[in-house]
Image (cartoon, rainbow, N blue to C red; front, side, top):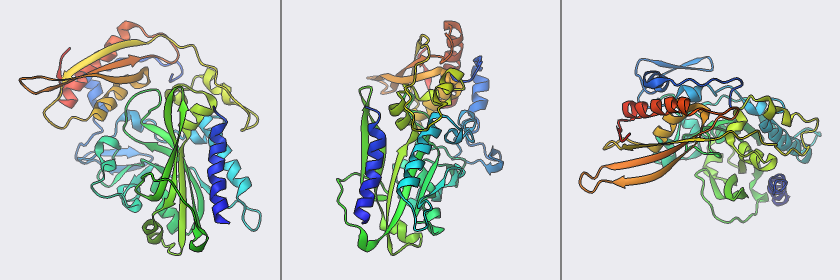
Length: 397
């Protein structure tokens, strides 16, 4: 029965989760200075210019907001690099689906797509999933746009409609996704998702859920796991909106979908404390995951944690068009993976001018060596200068 099949899918995810209760090799970081920083961020909206990505050219417009930091990560495909921890998680999920869900002739029921291009249209990323035109998830502040019509996918669900329309009724999609976000040990502008979709005949499905909200599934719910004292969202799932399924040409079917974050799951299962480590080429990190069996238990042995260098930056915000994610992108672009986290530690509104001031604390820490105060000072100064030039803030430094 389909009900038991759905419960098996959910149990599989819970089972995988329950087993859990630097950055460039030889990297010599160089402070860029605000002029170079500006050029690094200048992949943003210069009409007449193009963005070159994965062998194709995309004309820039007022929506373009890619940074070269993000562009440099496109095509790395960590989930397809053998023995990388994200590859191990992907392979474990694939193995489960291949063994548990088999077709009439003994072949796997689910097809796997793990090499789809991360460049999608805004229609694929939003409209095909019934996300309203005015929905906040479309904001430039939360996404990476090549231009008004193309973007780096914000979720692997951007491929759902196309695969359903092609006639598939059971598939896994794995890939890198891109979102502008805060800076800390659990967030990175590029991460990896795995999602599954399966269609069932309407008369087979009888199920009950606790309410949650996703635009493209209803009802929905999500799973969170407490990791190092913080609740991490790991998995979301639900019954697909019938309008989405119908529009893809499967009017007589009901769709079920779930998606999980590979980094979050790997952090929990392997006890990896910092999301930046997934991008490390440090052999001390990578060799820990070269195992003969993908199901072999691995507990990450931390690298020596080098001391942090902490600097604050304060500025008055411009009267309009300031977004915190713009500042976070600027810091990531200039500081790279030297930046461990950025915290907004103070907000202040002047009683007379009504201008707003923000103070951010930036924690710098190299994954492979000790940073000097001098080199951090150069990077920090570049952040200050670029913030003034590119974001229109008024420095209080």
